[in-house]
Length: 91
Image 1: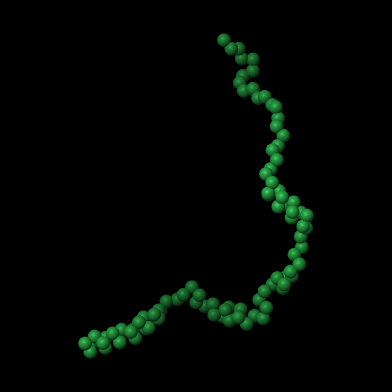
Image 2 (image 1 turned 30 degrees about the vertical axis):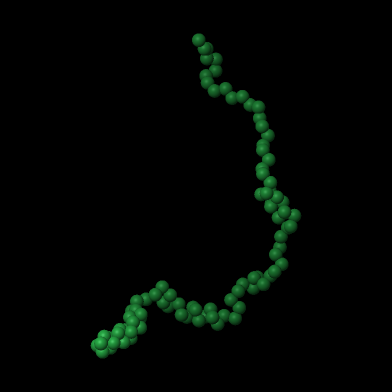
């Protein structure tokens, strides 16, 4: 019983050791860039503070109405198309 208890205690310590790998991750080497971005005073584009969005309201309403209403059908033509040789005699 004492041996089983001792081995289970040692196995618990080994679990933390096995979580450390000797491999590289995809983010390896990005620490300088990450630290630089953390210390940037204002990382946003200065134009992002502009809340006045330029636009034409009447034009926007026209575009929305164009998508809401079904398209009008085009003009119909009364054209006859004859297919076949001209002047062919039928028997």
